Length: 87
Image 1 (cartoon, one colour):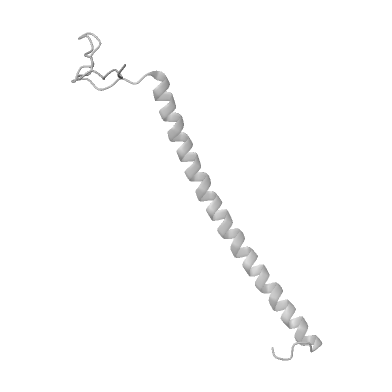
Image 2 (cartoon, one colour; image 1 turned 30 degrees about the horizontal axis):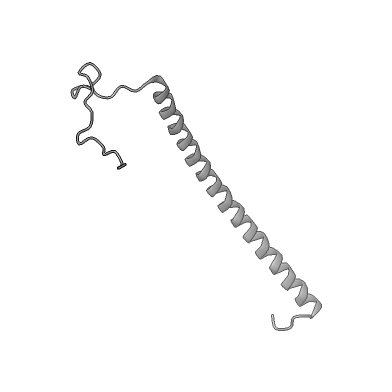
């Protein structure tokens, strides 16, 4: 037995069910709510990402300056004790 072949042309919808070419597709209430929900979620993700970037940049700067001060204190302390004569 051979495999059945698909019809050459797609089946036609009755005229009452066929979409009219002049009107835009109508969205259901669920589709409208889903679209608004995804747009809100994308907005919140963008805001959160921006705030995290700013927070990480500030934390990195503060960590760098504190580390630089600690390194300077260590070098000064070593100079006073005479341990690192090359500085």
